Length: 481
Ligand SMILES: Cc1cc2nc3c(=O)[nH]c(=O)nc-3n(C[C@H](O)[C@H](O)[C@H](O)COP(=O)(O)OP(=O)(O)OC[C@H]3O[C@@H](n4cnc5c(N)ncnc54)[C@H](O)[C@@H]3O)c2cc1C
Image 1 (cartoon, rainbow, N blue to C red):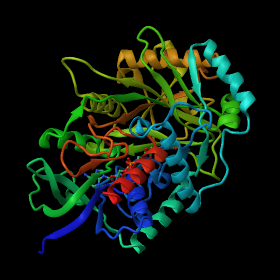
Image 2 (tube, rainbow, N blue to C red; image 1 turned 135 degrees about the horizontal axis):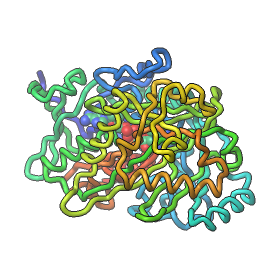
Image 3 (cartoon, rainbow, N blue to C red; image 1 turned 30 degrees about the vertical axis):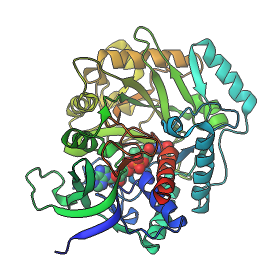
Image 4 (spheres, rainbow, N blue to C red; image 1 turned 180 degrees about the vertical axis):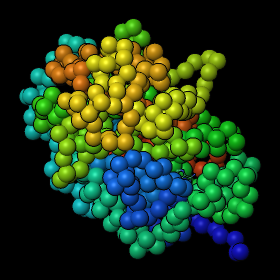
């Protein structure tokens, strides 16, 4: 086979990689670009859970997190924007630490326009009811809870799919080569300079004995592997001495409660970002990824690790709101392996649910009892994730995590009456893995020459908009050098 050589290889076709390729086309770049994606084309991605009622652990890879548009395809696409008056960027990651606040805002505007050009809804949620939001903010403040109200553009799960399909076509029509169903197994690094990648077909993703790798060479390699690739990226850092710092892992639950309790929040903000530090640990606990009238979902990582998540459609509605309640865990001497810790928690939880997501009522947790299937069937809050198994999540989540979550729910109940209703549901585990934070310079270059890192995987971003922005920004840097 002839040796393949490109100017640029982008590993992962998630929003970060896609927007890098998009921007390069827009800038008129003539570079020979290859994107390598372990999942499928966006039009071939579907989650069978809707038909089967339970997660069948798709092989070789879960459709929810892999394939063109990465975790974005089945996200309902809440694009986090910003308020004009904000002097900080509160959500989505650390991009502003590299670019500055004003440049980040400009970049969000620019990237948002691309989403609009490809069919995003023009409506922005969270701008209309400033007075009402202020009242909720003040009420929260009295309970030592901070509320960040960030305007949202909501694509909706089905619309996100359509939008990314158009982007996929646009990239291919404009000469970007996208190699699907292919795993980047390793990087080729010589004398601290990246030279290319080693790949294998995705059907061998779990085969650790595989040796028939194809070597593909490039002058520049960009890592955009998302949270799905966090473990792989950590392994790469260790193998090739890529500078990284011990990162964090966010562990918690997906919380589901009736829309009626969340009516004001949903109406005024669509998504509210509440943050508090409950006693006795004072760890940061936050709400994340709120889905009014939405559905709880599951996603499968390697070794069948199954995590809870949630989304909402533009047209199809449930009568429940779901949101993540997450605690950030940062470890200190002698333990520095947040990903391993998170995976252990997930494995415990999955084992207790016979490979499925566990669900328990809040009231049962307070009473110190498990939830039984029959109780779940008669519960006033009907679970939207049918595949979830009733049980006891307190066996799986650590005491500290559990205490943080319980105290946070009680605190928030004073701001959002009904938030601590005993019938509300906790799904376990919801975990956000980030690789050990990859050290990058202001150009997003790692300590390996010509190797760059963007998006969620290396810990730079934590959401669709920022991941997309990081791709646009790197494209500009790359084009101008
Ligand atoms: C159900 C769900 C709902 C969400 N809702 C929202 C939301 O409403 N708003 C929001 O801001 N964010 C949301 N998110 C998060 C959002 O999707 C991510 O922040 C975003 O997709 C990150 O983009 P990325 O490019 O960094 O990585 P990803 O989107 O994760 O893409 C990475 C890609 O790299 C591929 N890959 C990984 N490793 C390799 C390898 N070794 N070889 C080849 N390919 C590889 C993966 O298959 C994947 O396609 C949601 C996520 C999920 C799962």
